[in-house]
View 1 (cartoon, rainbow, N blue to C red):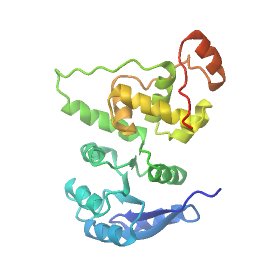
View 2 (view 1 turned 90 degrees about the horizontal axis):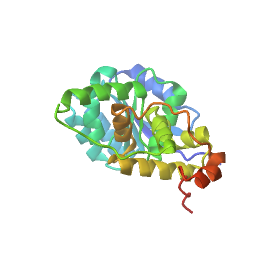
View 3 (view 1 turned 90 degrees about the vertical axis):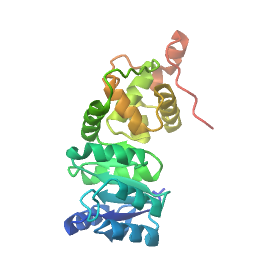
View 4 (view 1 turned 60 degrees about the vertical axis):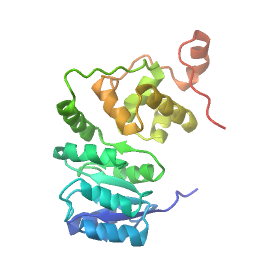
Length: 243
């Protein structure tokens, strides 16, 4: 079964970026339907082409403040946005997260990874590259009050491992393949993790995980094949997949 076609608009001040992105998506299920070199052009293209995803380089004419994201997002609220950013723009990225932007990659992203990111965000997931996550944590550290205290409900062994893979920028499907679980099982784990951490999405979960050291690898993770033994021992029971 072929993946569904995803319409995308590429926005960057630099023609070489737009040309390169178009070449990356050529032959894939991601179809470039428009380009933009400025915020004004991006808004116009989004309204006319109605893309599923906007791939946005922060080097965009007229992008002088984070408020420009609000203007672009309002042109098509249901559209997903993938930001291509440098590590020095952590403060901007925090604003983008609050606006609901779905993906964050650096200029060093590979062609394969970029396509995977666009597909993931188009299906409703959020993706952030670990290197950008580290910068976000640094920015959060500057803003955090010295008297602030946060607590997190204890996560199970398997939830910790799923969370660790989320902080590595892996999608639900990639996590399922890595751990040997069904996709529905991983989705259930992700929902439980977000509930326990008191966060609204994967990016916030990853940020909180790194802040509390919950992103470190564990050596005692039970495999999917050991689920029966785990249940017998009363340790960690994988949630039943829906349906």
